[in-house]
Length: 133
Image: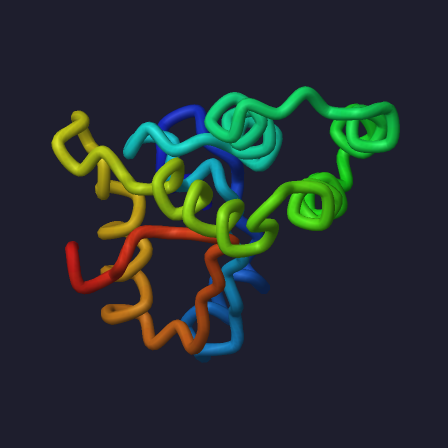
């Protein structure tokens, strides 16, 4: 079954599991693109810019290879004020632009899906405060 013209065909088993409340959605950072929030790589790059840091070779390798949580951990360990400074910057960078067009449209759609279809759980890597929606 297709829900969107030219969209993917959803298997009947998945639809039935959804109706039975047995589906868990895992949403990545892309769900927040409309709110102009960066993906994980963009977050690491913006942290380096905001904190005026030039990554050293091990950090550059972690960024290039993709374990961005490792890159952030290395930054926290290397920076004066470490974890607190990095976490404050992360909070600033991840503040959503709620006035952007369709900033919360995907979040609202997922919440509607959960509410209307008895979907049991949802997980966002990082997301907006749901009380803002």
